[in-house]
Image 1: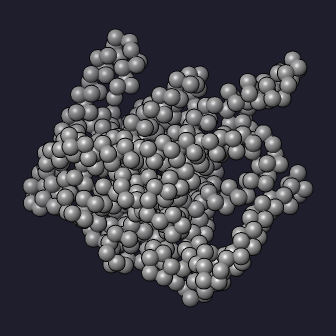
Image 2: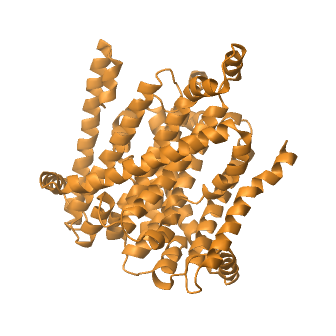
Image 3: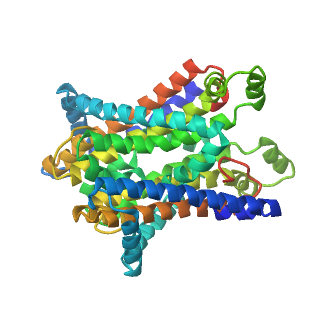
Length: 268
Length: 259
């Protein structure tokens, strides 16, 4: 919503106000429908009123409980995301730059890639047990492939003319890689970063739901077992909000680092 | 170039499997760690007994059902939202608010509402598959060349007929991209849903590959069989994607750019 403000021109401001208005109006209508259905269902455990969800959300935030769960989840997410980037980007560069590396590694990547991170959960449960290692392993695994494949593709699609031009001017290979190929691959690397971010959130929830003693995913399941549905929905709202903000942050980074890029999803 | 490079492709996978096997042979006999030869034996057993194919069919059935439900809603809503401005302006905020909700996060609610059987799993699949399809349908409809629509309007074709005969075919390639993404997500979430239902549903088994994996983990501790299931999950994912690509080429030979 706030992004619309960046368009900036005076007529755009008016437009933005009306968009915000439309947004609120639609959500308000949704809340009323939800409330009516909740009245009709008449069971607080199955479908609580939106107001009681809002109240529980407020209480969870005020008591700091939500903060603790969110901090644990975010810490795991950031750690494994960084790990995936640290492994995926260099490996992708290697595979993009040298055909022998991609010949060797590509089959392994292609064998592992279709096996979703979630399918690793039972085996990882056995190896790591319930704890921090399981979600970190799963998220790193899931985020690794978008980083790797997009870096590789980005390096490979570097404009040959640019490389030849640099070579003609006597620039050595290492400098070409650093100053021509990496900048040219950056937009696609950042696209990979965004895909990795989305996939990471989804698997974080799954991994925590099944195999972690803490975190937001654990919290949903915990409150479900206690039949505290308003709290379950409150946690889901927070997960969605954080997922949304993560995506916004990555989009912002993409615009900031590669303002020239018009690539996939660089805009909205 | 492909003929000379072929042998290199096998070096690393074969080396890794051999190393894995050698590592497995150093383990004490009581170890439960999966080893390639045991995995193979377990795969033969699971396939021959028909348990794995049955479980995969059950999971695929749920994916298909959830996918159909999601597809029908996404197609109708997407066409209307892409074509009629007011519909989009009112529904888009709702779609955008629900989009960031991870499908797996809804699983506890699904269990609460629908129990631990097939309906909960189908719900999760439908939810996961809905968003890629609707987003791509809207994008596809908006990408339809204006002149085609205007030409039809000039000829006095009713709006809904234009939607069906002009907009839908022109948007089809983009819709299909959404279908492929949605299928990938759907297959991923069915595994998650079945796993979580298996682990959190209090044992009320509901079948499917995901639940099978959980049973192997929790009750039998047969890691070889878990690895077999993982490989099967990967192979099904590959088969789904290749099948859809093939379908796309067959249905829309003109849509080169979307491959």
